[in-house]
Length: 232
Image (tube, rainbow, N blue to C red; front, side, top):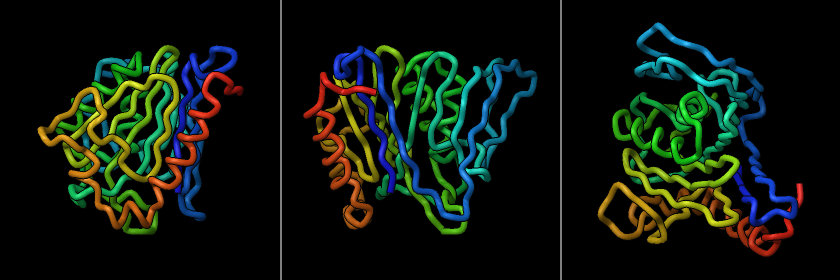
């Protein structure tokens, strides 16, 4: 089980932005830190974990924290201060077909985004083109969709996905996500016409087994209670 949290400037004592994430990879699956330099590219494609997609002319420098066997990462920060973490969520649209996985999206955001909002747009544009899918467990046959918490020095967003569907919300002060969808009808923008994203797409039994709501409610309540008094 893993959780991701953010506290913006108006929620911290010193006006800093605090971002935190833990990870629950398998015991025999090394989690490594990697620094990647800014680079210009002549090649037209980049190979992600399972598929190739179009490369951009230049990618930014960033630090990744990643499972050793995956191209992407669970968390990271780039030279512009964009920081992102992903959470596994269990939806009715999960695909086993190999495509981009959530951790690929984390790395692609860090390579291509100068702000949190640009990161949101980057994921949406790629998601609508490629979707998401493929095995995400090292030895386990684990498949899932993804939610993301994304921040920079000024603002933060929660972005949640189910297949090619997406929904996002700008965060006012604090937020946390875990292994369940959090956005219902309280969002800023969405790809679909149904009112309630969580009720429409979440697999309730798997979400309950993952205890995502339980953990998210605890961390969010704690952050809200301490808002304005949070310290590093």
